[in-house]
Image (tube, rainbow, N blue to C red; front, top):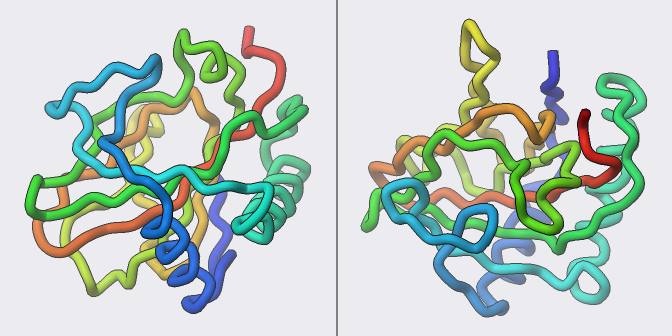
Length: 182
């Protein structure tokens, strides 16, 4: 299977700090691979964190988790992290969601994505809907909703964030890169 869970990668206080860092960053409407926007496919606000300064500790934790999961579960050829950390906010007021998609595409960086890691930042009782679902072919896996829980999966896998029907769901996403899958 091309998924892996890492419970409590971040504490509640650390997850709240990531949300605060995102609030301090400039947010914009989330797009698709290649920079396109289609609100029927994705409705979310995103902020990019500076993983070299204020969010360096976040990136260190992500890198450590990815290294362990890749060694134990995936064995992909990962060479670097070419993209900044992304914090997404899916709000009930716009039925925030991201329909079925994969994270690999024709974009200059997206074609090199190998693993996707998504960290739950919101308290699970603070919103309804918003499940991260990963298509396993004959079934779907639903990511854990505990604050700080991380889900890793191969970037070529179809996945979605179901519409949020109450509250706001915050998540942190990062991608690992390496030679393109053949």
